[in-house]
Image (cartoon, rainbow, N blue to C red; front, side, top):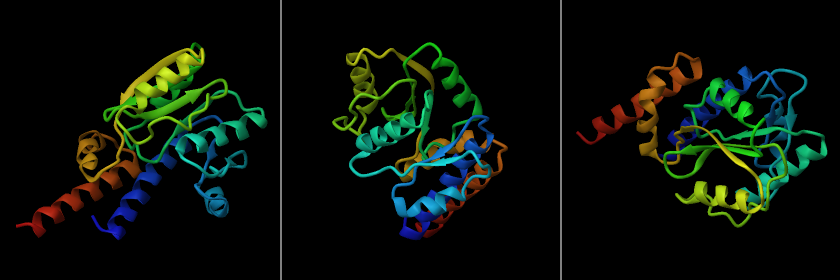
Length: 202
């Protein structure tokens, strides 16, 4: 997949995440990678109560700790984190996670590749900087760290994320049964990618 094609996929994935956020009844936060992207990020969602918190620097764990600290300084408590790489998420998944946060300090949705598709917490995260991000052992390591920090751990239903080209085919069956506009558009684009691939190798 070329750079232009990858960018188009990323835009479709972002549209799916924004579709999830637009349905969420609570306050919404967008965390762009760089502070220079804050103006752009602030225009992605409608509504006056949305927050934009840049991720800061460091690895993913350090950036998550930064976002978490910033939001708790503003008095936020129950937080649910999703990325833009899980187009199979739904409002029900987020609602189930929020419900489980009433019982557990942390809640995770396991990804099929060993990572997580949802992270949620009702108290500060422990130091996440040393976790094996982007590996198949992340989910187990994250759970272990939380329990070592005396935080209870609960689980929401498992999901699938998109890290590689082949993952697009993995989420396609579920997308084909999803009537939300951004999901329909992504499914159509995935089908076009693999149709072109078959044609070019014929």
